[in-house]
Length: 272
Image (cartoon, rainbow, N blue to C red; front, side, top):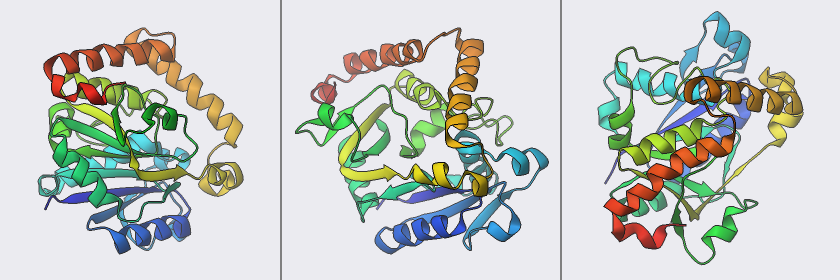
């Protein structure tokens, strides 16, 4: 049986994080690690693994890209990275509706040895219309708070020269992460790893946490955060790639996506 590591990102919402931890632990075989992303000490999860406690982290948090870099690079430094076959990356606002999600993910990965990234379907997503009767499709774009990645794919693209919260899997210079998934998917397909979405696992995003508890999370109110998320991400995208729109970033990823199926035509039935 494959071995899974689950990483949950917390920032001052211990009850939410602990509930997610316990739900995953109850129904799935996985080791679980909790990152405190600049949380106050009285708001730590009782399952805390690592604490981001430097001044900038305390002030601004790590957000998803830096938080996952921090966790994965710590597993690497501690010599534990090699123990796992897959990494399940979760923001604590993820609501997993499929209890035994790990086993369902594993079955799909076993049938698709070139699948590097997989995410579940949110019940209110338009992707339902893309899936139709299919249980899995390969995609070139996703924006998600919950994804599972294959270790071999991570090994192909990770930065180990100076592993930390800025470098490892994501580009931590893209602080809030707008466009981060598109970049990750482009890197995956350019190394001949696919990215998919499945209706066999349902995972919603509880946006009400950011709307109603932004003061506790110590982030900007929802609308301001959304504005900064896009503006900062577009600046990063333009500086790094010269792209002026998210569409350009997606088309960049789709170029590698289309080539993938030329090399692996056996997966064409899963192509959009």
